[in-house]
Length: 564
Image (cartoon, rainbow, N blue to C red):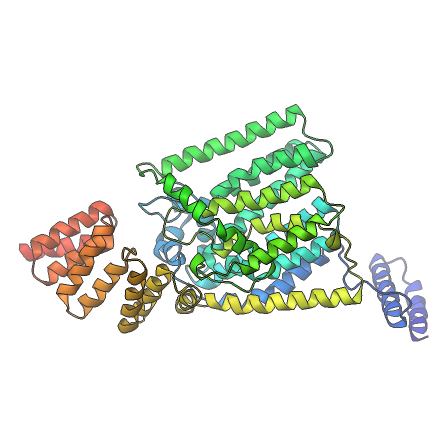
């Protein structure tokens, strides 16, 4: 009765103003609001708990995501790659004049060249234009990139499945899932979120090209593919997924002309990327590819571990190692997934193969071992997770979910809340360098890298006793752990224990002969002992290894002045 009377009053008021388009719009909005409220309170029909029309899903993603990840805006650097990528490259990142350096070097500007990822460095350069190397702006960009990817994922899943409510639910799971928090809370983790954004954008324009073969769709598809490839090497598998989708899933299938055009485009982009990468890596010694492949084989159990984390995100680690990981959840998750898929009568074979290809092609290359860093860091699940979502969309019970049922809505809210709480707790491990490496040692006590870098954090905090304990723990696990002997030598050097310091520096150079810091530090030790000729020789050797080692240049200048 109240609704009806209110509506009559407003109707009379607006009847005299119907010529005004503005007031007609207000009338329509009030009309909708009144009758939705009436329906909700009268109980005649159930109002959908969430209307996924036009811009609404994207606003929900943005607001809910900020509530979840807003705390990371006040996080600092972890000193796990971010100090090398940002703090040590502040001068390069400060000016766009240095873009050429970004595209002509590996991602770390190092002598040991592993990764050619100029778009990642370019994103850091864009951030540095606002607040220098203050962590706030880098964390803000990580959050915004994540929101952008989730929005693209929602649109992508809608195009792929034509199920809007299910696509939105899975996109929210992707938004809050704890296993992906490393890609947001850890600044270098944006490499995988950037990759995901470009891959999704490229695939969306591939959809458009299949439906309407226009030049603009073709060029934009290739443009985003090129951005993905210059972001991370794993993007090279995208053409395989596109051809599979076009040949076996798209109803119209690719004709010969389309295949030729796409092949020519992919080949041109990969060729340009390969040439630029080769020029950037000129003079680099070839890696041990056999060892890298063996590393992949040895890391295959991590495949089970990662699948478990997608469904049961309770065994999380900022620096996972197999020795400290529990495979039980992974085995259980695989049994559940296979069982649910097997009993699904409406599963589609090619969609399932497409999902598995997506998951494996983007994940397995990260298992290749080129250095001592663990090969299954959780942020590397970011892009493979999309394949996992495509796979579970082929399970019947998920297809049949009725999102208007009150019980289901409660279950969904509880799942999202649980994941959000775990996410917030896990994200706090990235608060600063000390909390990060303490969490690494706690979750992975068998990782020499974790102990070594926690020792480095204690050293930077002038807590030399704890630093020594962690270095010794790292060497007990791996007596050739890079930099551990060198760092121990620095502690002994500061204590004036020159004999022990010399032993540690020499041990470092035996296992790591081209380590510029150990070479310089041994020269510094000899300088303090008055052995100037030995110091000069070592500092000259340091500059051969790294011509930009400023302290070595300064040391040689001091020696010249002293010997005049």
